Length: 415
Ligand SMILES: *[C@@H]1O[C@H](CO)[C@@H](O)[C@H](O)[C@H]1NC(C)=O
Ligand SMILES: *[C@@H]1O[C@H](CO)[C@@H](O)[C@H](O)[C@H]1NC(C)=O
Ligand SMILES: *[C@@H]1O[C@H](CO)[C@@H](O)[C@H](O)[C@H]1NC(C)=O
Ligand SMILES: *[C@@H]1O[C@H](CO)[C@@H](O)[C@H](O)[C@H]1NC(C)=O
Ligand SMILES: *[C@@H]1O[C@H](CO)[C@@H](O)[C@H](O)[C@H]1NC(C)=O
Ligand SMILES: *[C@@H]1O[C@H](CO)[C@@H](O)[C@H](O)[C@H]1NC(C)=O
Image (cartoon, rainbow, N blue to C red):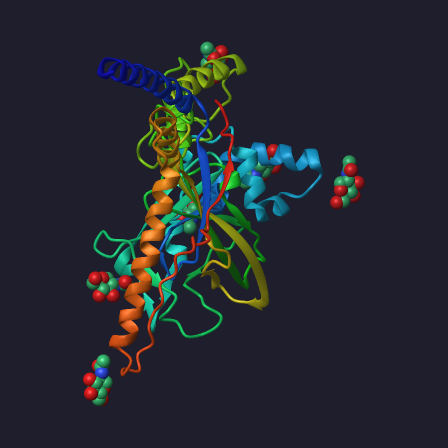
């Protein structure tokens, strides 16, 4: 009798372990379930503000026309437009010289774009001018743009903006006054993020030259968290776009004809002046791109993006000052998160219950019915104890709360 029971037990244990092994193996090779969570925040971290400004807007025009007279002349002849007309479009000028310009042209002709950022005001219980005290402006370049990153810290901590301390209906979290008299593009970014050269990450703001303009930006924050190996998403904790660009940039500098990568964001005073952005052959570029994308193949585990909604007003009054107002989100923050562990535990327990007749359902029923009786008793005694006091008695509820999470399968791009 005892022996038979032992044998059955051993068979059950072996079977259970076998099935758990297979189930775990299968689980790891399936796509992970994703949950969507929403949240209306009461306070915001002051994001980094990145500006991409056409290169020609902040290069000395006299010097630029001297050096690139021929290119401008050719373009003007081809399209039958006047040189004067061309000089008004910094965007077109930048595009015309993009393949010819050298690092030394940019570094010699650059005018100080950061001087055109005049003030940065955060609106809390009262206005606070933070630019000089808390913020720094870094500049970078590519062959098309000057990039400015405005990042503010309060003793290395992010500056927190609370919406509760502002009483008005039309809340402006922050306002930037500037004198940039050109078309530009803007992006809000997480304070720990890298610069981004992709055009689609930016929102373009047009310019009515010399008019007062107000650009209102309201944002929505989207968070995304995936899971690392062994899940099939197999992501890595890094900024893929940044690493990929750096890899291509370094590989292109290793070619016999050293060339700067036009999609990279470059620091000033880092590269030799004679370097330019001329095209490399398709063959060379494809082999470099292939090499780098194989090396850096995993997707990012974590990302946070500000999705901007733009609203632009031309005041039709001549002034030198223009404004960018940043408004809090109308939409809630959205979190895409992977929830693998809880699901797996349920799976695990169901297998155990199959083999050993352990029912998690029974346990739950037992648990809730116990809770109900004990809570009823508690409420009763509370009622008798507090019959005199005017305090309302909080009644406990045991219904399952509707959660904010809508589960759905999310197929991740395979690279
Ligand atoms: C632009 O360059 C010219 C000479 O090339 C110089 O005379 C002029 O002062 C420069 N302008 C600015 C704003 O630096
Ligand atoms: C530019 O080149 C044209 C001829 O191609 C010439 O007539 C003109 O004077 C030049 N302008 C400057 C600023 O050098
Ligand atoms: C170029 O434009 C001018 C007017 O701006 C016009 O008179 C002239 O005919 C045009 N030339 C050609 C070749 O289209
Ligand atoms: C910076 O931090 C100090 C102390 O934490 C705080 O009193 C001050 O209000 C902060 N300044 C801003 C602009 O948030
Ligand atoms: C390097 O550049 C020179 C001129 O810019 C060109 O003649 C030569 O073919 C280039 N070599 C390679 C390997 O691309
Ligand atoms: C209710 O209040 C009365 C007098 O205010 C007091 O005598 C009695 O003990 C109280 N009962 C309870 C249950 O606290």
